[in-house]
Length: 247
Ligand code: ATP
Ligand code: ATP
Ligand code: MG
Ligand code: MG
Ligand code: MG
Ligand code: MG
Image 1: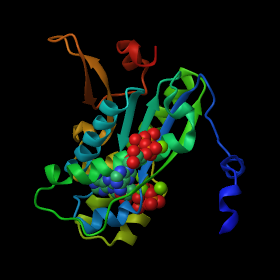
Image 2: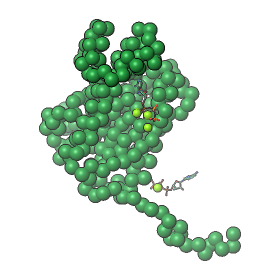
Image 3: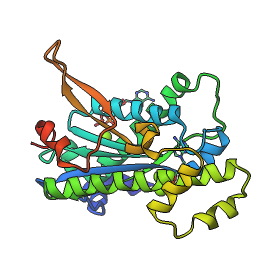
Image 4: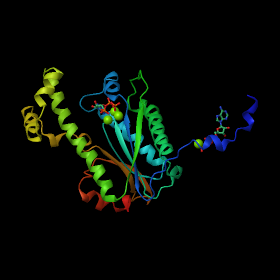
């Protein structure tokens, strides 16, 4: 229209509400696959755990650490990944929406780019996509509690899913499997696994512990490199052995 040139950009910008994440806190961006229950089924992922799919997630997370130097640690399980940014990061001037959207879109792009490397024989029908959110944690203690919470969740879900799929594969319907596991404690689940000749602690560590991604000194070259490990991050020993991560 005629008057369009008279509109000042500041007027339109004044409607924008910028939310900046609190200074001096660890920012955690957690991404999670959208409708992965269906995505896994469509793509024939192995149940309860498809190792290739987990390795694809890990490889994407490692790329994020390579590309964003301010990401100091990441922890992943199932279709989710938590990225920890250093507490004095000024990435996007700590604007939450920019940080979360950049992490989510880079992760989704990497997932699609790397798919063929992990599933050379598969073509996906629907595009995988992720959502994301950010949370600030004000102390390293609370940040470690957050990460411990995700690892406990990994353990509980993995134990449940391992039992569930054993029952289903032994001929029970999904509903039957669900109801026979309802209200069972760890002990009962371990007994059930034992009946199938399975020692929970003998299952691959990537399934039991999830995956941690961080920078570690390469003794040979003296340079930092991004590593993926499956370690206990609930116990303080990991953090004592890697004091530089949270310094
Ligand atoms: P939402 O969109 O709400 O996140 P969702 O279907 O993605 O829904 P989640 O709670 O995120 O639900 O659960 C992820 C699902 O994907 C679970 O069913 C989980 O078992 C499955 N899944 C994720 N990764 C793997 C994997 N590597 N192997 C097998 N199954 C997986
Ligand atoms: P930032 O990460 O801060 O957004 P940027 O390099 O993406 O940095 P923008 O301000 O978003 O900077 O500008 C987008 C740039 O991409 C401009 O240089 C623009 O000319 C170029 N660009 C975008 N789309 C096209 C296109 N279709 N053809 C040619 N150039 C394009
Ligand atoms: Mg979700
Ligand atoms: Mg999901
Ligand atoms: Mg999930
Ligand atoms: Mg921009």
